[in-house]
Amino acid sequence: MIPEGISLNDRFKIKEHLNTSYALSLAEINDETIKTISNIDIKTLCCNLLKYWKTAREKRDVEYYMSMTGHDDRVRDSIDQLNTKTGRFYRRLQTVQKTGPMRSLFRAKKGYKFIVADYSQQEARIIAGLSNDRVAIDLFKAGKDIYLETAKIIMGSGADGRLGRNLGKEIFLGLNNGQSSYSIYESLAWLGFGYDVDDVQGMIFRYDMNFEGIKTWRDNIVSTNLEGGVISTALGRTLKISNDVKVNSLYNYPVQGTAADGFKLALIYLDRQLDGQDARIVHILHDEVIVEARTDIVDFVAVTVKNCMEKAFNDILPEVPFVVEPEIRDSWG
Image (tube, rainbow, N blue to C red; front, top):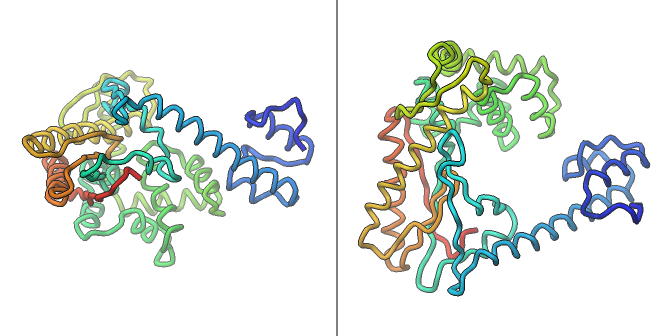
């Protein structure tokens, strides 16, 4: 079904060949698009291709991670602190997939455990704090899932479960990343929702009506910051902007920049608290901290990790509760 002249690793040529030869219209070959294929033989081929690509990638990844491993069997990553305008760190290990077996290969040394901790709904909490939106803040204070509650607000009580949460997340984060209604419609279509653009525009209208503080904050970002020529994080770290800056950058910088500031503050707090203990930060990824601690003190250190990470953001945005639930593991994954 695939000519000899086309490499099994050339996804674009394979896709074009299948579209041309079998009257398909695949934008790409993935788990979602193969559901649209009615020809059983072609569907089986695509499933096998996905398995092959996954295995080939895992092999390349293992070889890459082994190249980072020293004679003591410890992996050493490099961290670029100046990689982005927002101040987010860049690490080579951020490419390690959350799903699959890869993270389980990174194990704590004998007699120690990993404490893996990240923030729950960090971006949404930052947006609530920056905008001072009382509805969003009250939902967080009540311990609610903001994405699921967003879906209920715009779709009614029937919007429940994983699909409802996915819809709410796309609307909440999509709007605050500067996405248009059509872009959000495309994202929802890719997730399997059958809404049209008018439906999505109605959802956005109901969202803005209920989260008025966030809507006002978005509007003010565009008018105020374009006029002033700078945009800043909650801690006051500024970025100069030009008149032709994209709107999504105006929304993105305060949120991602504040996330970066708070995360670095958390690392400072944590490093100080771990001083003198048989525990240390061994890696960081986006909003995740990995601490390696001696087994007999790991429970105590996990509480320290939680307190330091939550304190950092509560110092910056005190109106919004930030939540961290550390997990104690033998391996990263």
